[in-house]
Amino acid sequence: MPEVPSPFVYWAQTESQVTLKVDLTDVKNPGVDLHEKKLKFVANGQGARGPDSYAFTLDFHSGIDPEESNFKVIDRQVDFILRKKSSGWWPRLTSQPQKPAWLKIDFDKWKSQDADGDEDEGTGIDGEGKRDITKDYPNMYDKLYKEECGYRQDSMPTTYESVGTAMKFVQLLQFLEVMHPLFGYTKGGFMTPLLQVGARAIILFCMIESEPRMQTKPVVFYLFVVWSSVEIVRYPYYLTQLFKTEFSFLTWLRYTIWMPLYPLGFLCEGIIILRNIPYFEETNRFTVAMPNQWNFAFHFPSAMRIYLLLLCLPGMYIMMSHMNRVRYQKLSKTNIKRKYN
View 1 (spheres, rainbow, N blue to C red):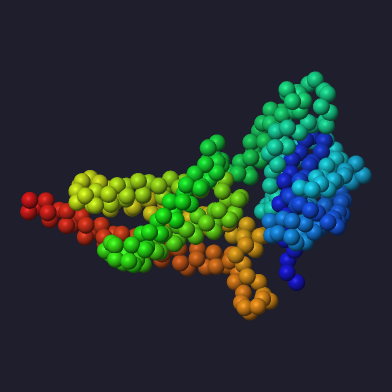
View 2 (cartoon, helix red, strand yellow):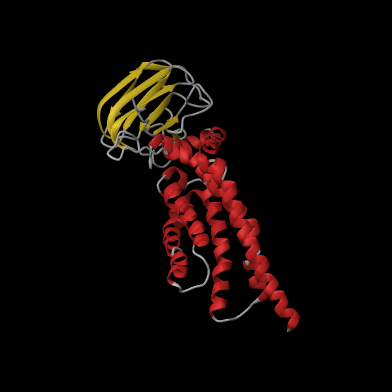
């Protein structure tokens, strides 16, 4: 029997209640089993894996009052309002410190939910008639924000939203570096650019573009900085070669800057793959399960683990060894020219 997937569940809290937002549309036949310390949910709906049957179980950190709690099914989601048995601030939602990958924090609710559900109170009410909990409990909000997203600059979560389209466009253009030697427009082999450009395309389109939760991670910002730093030097160098002009510093920089940047790039790519493993296990994206008409099975998270364990370090060694040989040949030729001139 295949494992039933879990939908994304977003939670927030006040001193008196917990709210849950189950990210499922067109929900049919919801089954809810609510107890003081546990919630079981199962339903058919449209989620991350498309139309399917979804289920999850939550073991609460503290007790709730099932009689005073309720849920509501709407077109876009399922909303729960769970009344706490005793007022107080929970350090986390679940009884275990390790939270499941599908459980997320509903930051919108944290910023706007009224602690008492009364929009007419005069104390602590903002201009829109709702309490800003982040001002009441700044330490707890900051702790949960860092737990969910990691410590980061405010600009990092929007990196992919801001430049992702441009990065995808220029990444597709880089496949010209593979086609040019194949058609004889440039000298050299095509395997090295194919490995480099192909690996970047897999990271960008399979690891980041296809998983929205990865797009807001700080590592995407660092990866784009590393990639861009390499190309900012590499393409001006190629431009000078078209005009048969040699700038010694630019040549040295072209064949030296990769030394710190390539390991950093491999590190960022490895982190992205590692953090994506639980996401792809949850969604089964790019996984082919049997039975099927091809009689073929492929488990994408296992392929990601194999790459990290067996292929990542050898791939980095091969690439850096190649770059070191090219650097030695190029800079040695430059030094010979200077000597005889």
